[in-house]
Length: 168
Image (cartoon, rainbow, N blue to C red; front, side, top):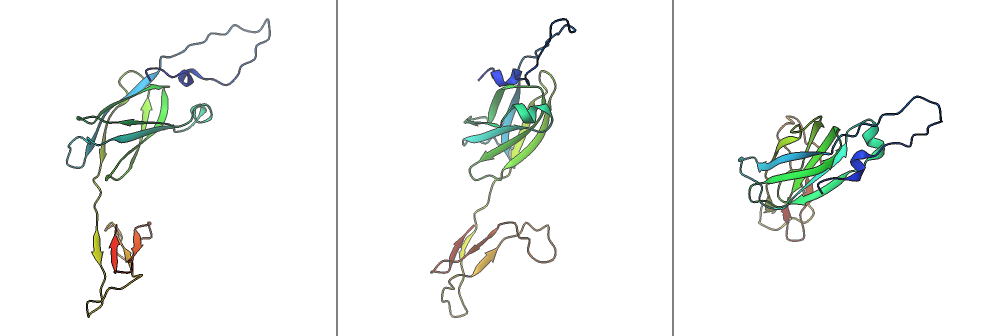
């Protein structure tokens, strides 16, 4: 949507006659514009989802996260109707590693972004013993190469099925 009434939300304010005057200054909603590319710097042309959520402060109490799904031959997107402030932008697409990026909307054009999603890999295989018999229930782990000693427990593990097969 081009505008979102939540962008102008505020906590309730109570006034008593005779107090100082009040001046309300409302800023027009802002937008995050940009494109999503992969690690080869090609546009992500499959549907991708962007989720914005407040980073801190007043926005955290008054706004909830919002998600929109985009499909574009060029990877372009416009996520409109956002208040100025600090935001976290999460980007996801099938067969790509998710990305979270912090950004500050503080005026027109401030939300221009180029988001790079790394393509995911698929690893599959079969675990067999020395005689070539499948091994059922073997634990297979993957690591990202950043750990020199031992395995990092980051959820990248599976067990082989009855035929000894596994898929990451």
